[in-house]
Amino acid sequence: MTERVRGAFAGARERSSAFIEQQRADGARFIDLPGILDADPVFVDLVDLPALLPLLRMTVGEDLALNETSARLFYPGPTFTSPFHSDLANVLGVNHAHTPNLLVKLHVFFEDLTPDQGCLAFIPGSQHFPPHHVNPHRPTLSGSAAVGRIVPRAGDAVLFNTHVLHMAEDNRSPHVRTSLIYTYGHFWMKSHGNAAPADLAQFAASPQRQQLFGVELPGISHFARRLDRLTPPTRLQRLKDNGARAAHRLFPTVRTPPRA
Ligand SMILES: O=C(O)CCC(=O)C(=O)O
Image 1: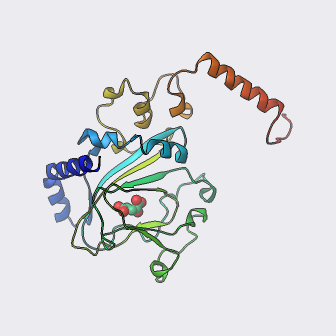
Image 2: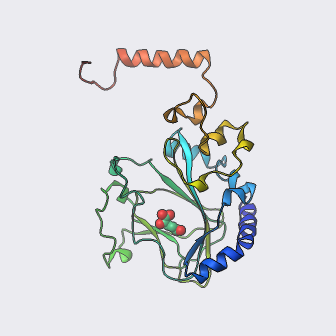
Image 3: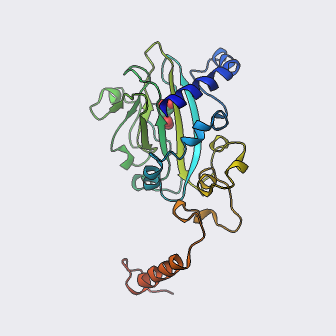
């Protein structure tokens, strides 16, 4: 798989060489290759890789959907990311300190990185802080023992809650850092245009991929899409659901005030 990804990424990079040249001429320090899900089937296969999908379902929930993709080249030089940041600090309506599963990122590496090649750094535990709790510009922060760094090998993937304080460090090596970043959230969220391949009709026989790529189904609410309910419920399932609802009414686990 890692070799397939590496080869396909190299092909996509080659085909985008004019775009890359233009971006570099305009001063870009990092470049995201366009339309990666259409560049090679391996990039679609990565979205629901059997080795990863169960972990994503457990982490985010059964209403899992792809939210964004980036196929990234990070050139030698200072980092392009904000200093330690939460991606969600400006998202309203959610208590981030208590919500570990709103939006997660999977950084996939298919080349070994050296420690100075723009690796990811995190402040573990900071996902429990309220937004803007830490001043990311504190000069001592990057040297603090609170910071953890990950130096990945080819074939590694790093999955994290996007509220944990994180950043890419400077790329002080002479080599471009390459990676894929797949962001996952919930089906009801608005996703980016690059979170689905152009031809969605090819997934007509795959309800799993329809959900992951945000394909709407007539008669099914945005809030009701579930990877563990891809087919209509059987009579037994309906019976079980009704039983569970009745049991919950009779023996509630949480006491709520009486109904008005
Ligand atoms: O390492 C990168 O390319 C970006 C890291 C980052 O800040 C992010 O994924 O939100």
